[in-house]
Length: 306
Image 1 (tube, rainbow, N blue to C red):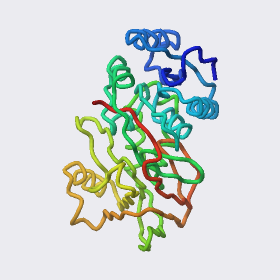
Image 2: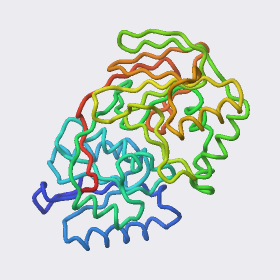
Image 3: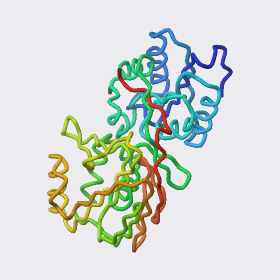
């Protein structure tokens, strides 16, 4: 943590992920961010952590110092580290969406422009949000097992750097052509079931920015990051045509009437599979099943548009 010459409650701590610079050089990115905050005449520090561990440490130290906000300048991974560092405190997180997917920014209606996002950081309102927790890690968006985690693991940083958001489409095409599946054993509070499926999602904020749909899609019918529940979304597909049909239904918010889609809500969820499948947390690979998760109501703070 840098020295804080201003009272902590006035200061913004900006965590910059230089790999999420949107094609700009890190120096140019820092100058643009500095200019945007200086335009609002607020005190700020720009910090470029050397990795996720250091980002988490800086966010935690900033929260303990009682700063005005921790600002995540990057993608979903950077936002997740900021949220994990501030969890359980009153210090909010703001987002400057500079990553490839920016799914959390989409869920909280953060403007895509740097200037618009900085305006929300400075002038926005603080919203209490639920956070999921799995294996000691908190997540704000989605934890998943199966196809989505395989897709994330297969979408290399080089591919994301060269193709941007199109990288996820390329990865999806590779996997959906021959979707894999496993036998899942799922316990969700008082519910227990076994099902052959391709993907199980535990959604907290379940909106997905999907091109070319301007408003994106929601992966389930009742998802809210303020209801104290995780939404268990189970998708079964044996071929590409099944996925196309399900995606079309989800895009049109037709969640019922298709036994390839099962939705549950719970405070605690355990997911096991045979064979073990890949797991992701907020877009970052997180090993393999089994996974256990629970919801922590109102554990996080987010700055959102007024």
